[in-house]
Image (cartoon, rainbow over all chains, first blue to last red):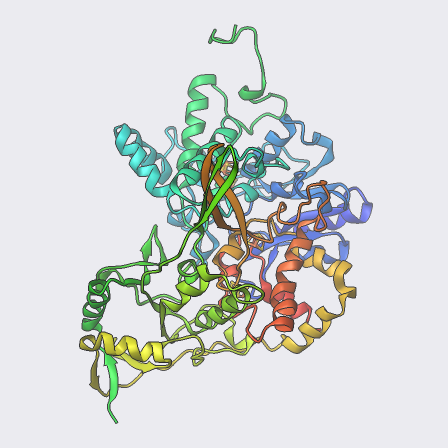
Length: 297
Length: 336
Ligand code: SF4
Ligand code: SF4
Ligand code: SF4
Ligand code: SF4
Ligand code: SF4
């Protein structure tokens, strides 16, 4: 797959169809992958593809990265789950479908964290999203690299995240509160969760608005709770469960529980799943006269 | 001559002694599946098999958030009352030699043009007990910044593990000696064989002198190299928040329109609002320029201004970075 990927990247850069290929490369020790930006066809061989390619590179397509936008039209190496975020960005008018060339990678799963890699992709080191993945064959791409995957996700979603959500749902109000207060108490307000998320593309995040200060920047329980809850609310109906925020969080806050729970709520209320169709707008940004709820009428 | 020994079965006694005398005992312990510095009350909580804690213990001397003053706004103006800091004696056990060095870096900045008592008083009440490294991972690079597991600077007490899991104790400072005297019952005498220290290999392609010479000549400022190596930075504060020498903070007011607290909170040069002017202009417009600042701070400003180090090679920033930006790769580039 790597060879085909490199060849395609080379072609795209040489023809001038794209100006930069956003993909994965090795670190110095060749032990971890890291994002690379290839602008010169001669450097296309730096691209790699393997189960360590965990990052959702779609973040680099957002307006937070003006220097990358300044390079010109990008091609992006993307797994199905990453493409979901690209889809959301398109539905939210961040760019048009034609503004990006998607090199879709068929995928048999990645590791949850690169540190877990011992040379073999075992189910226990894969994130919940991979065990339930229905986009191993990229659903929106200009070019697909890799053999078709025959994986079919289980009928009822399985995995650690779903089990934990069930356990939390079973708690009473006080128990839920205690659980989350304890988890959020570790937050250090580094905002890695926000920065790594391609759907957190606001140039001025509400937490940076300080006249008045909507969200206290202090990492005390009140500030942490308001930050984490506000961020969650801003992702409702948009988040694709890519898991980047949880992966980036340096203090291991189980943000995937929040993400997946929101997805379930939106699914139940609107029968909508974000990231699948670039032509359907997410429920939070549309008004429909035949909305089944009538509170807004 | 007999060595002073801290037996592993006496660690609990030491913790109890510290707690009984009103001090807090901080050690590497498990929290949410990772090893971090946190208060412990029992020896069983202390993790001994770790490389470095995920967080830096700087939060003990420079808390993530702290109230520095209280204010009320009345008819006649603002009434501001500063807070005093009366720190508790704090013992950090299991620091690594690299991060022990970082205290002098923090002290340098917090006593530079103004004595910040919130820092100095806390540091005065801090006893650093270092445990020398017997293993490392592939991002430890202390030897590349001229330190090593044998470095004792910054440690009050320096421990070496023995084959049987005890510690050979060496008091480095007066503070360390006083600590041992105060808790004498936890220590014993004997002789033991220390485990071999693990000294990470120096990265041969890195030359600190060349780095600082190249950074001094500001013509590199708009060099393509910054974009090439660091454009992947997503601008979170993770690296700066875990870094034992990063020290930037922001002052913010919290409360109502009539009264509240003035707080000192960690800030990071990696945030886009860090240098954003009220006019809307941002001198560090792109993320890689912010990353350039982090590098400049550590390898140009620090060596220029202070005798202490800007980077101690603990590797935390590399381990924690969501995009795996490796500072040593940039060091390598600037050693050319
Ligand atoms: S969720 Fe699917 S596409 Fe994404 S990494 Fe896992 S298996 Fe691959
Ligand atoms: S999982 Fe996290 S990073 Fe991914 S889209 Fe949802 S909120 Fe953003
Ligand atoms: S990444 Fe984690 S610690 Fe950082 S702000 Fe987000 S939740 Fe808090
Ligand atoms: S810059 Fe990185 S390696 Fe250097 S002291 Fe800070 S965290 Fe450690
Ligand atoms: S270098 Fe890594 S950890 Fe630091 S701000 Fe950039 S992305 Fe975050």
